[in-house]
Image (cartoon, rainbow, N blue to C red; front, side, top):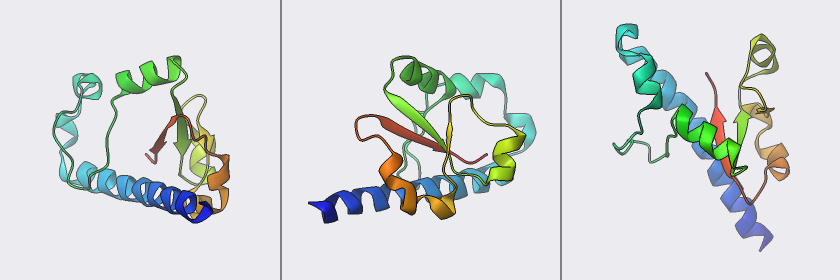
Length: 114
C-alpha cells in the first residue's frame, strides 16, 4: 500500500516538473502581445500535449474559495520572496519528493513555477 501511495506522489511530482517545463516552452514560443486578461480567465478546452490538466485563474479562485485545492509554488526561495500567490506553499522542485507527505490527499494540488 505504501508503495502504491509513493508511486502516486512520484507521478504527481513528475507532472509538476513537466508542467513547469511545458509552460516555459509555450511562453517562449508565443509573442507577448497574444497574452491578455481574457485568456487568463477563459476555460481551457483543448487537451494539452503533456496530458497535464491546466486550470484558469478563475477556476483556481473558485477551487480555493471552496477549500478544494491547495497551491504549491515549486520555484526556489529567492523567487518566492520576490512574490507569490497568496496562500501558496513553497516546495521547490528539488525538495518535492522529500516533502510529499506535506500535501493533502483530499484536495486538488495546483503547482506553479512562473
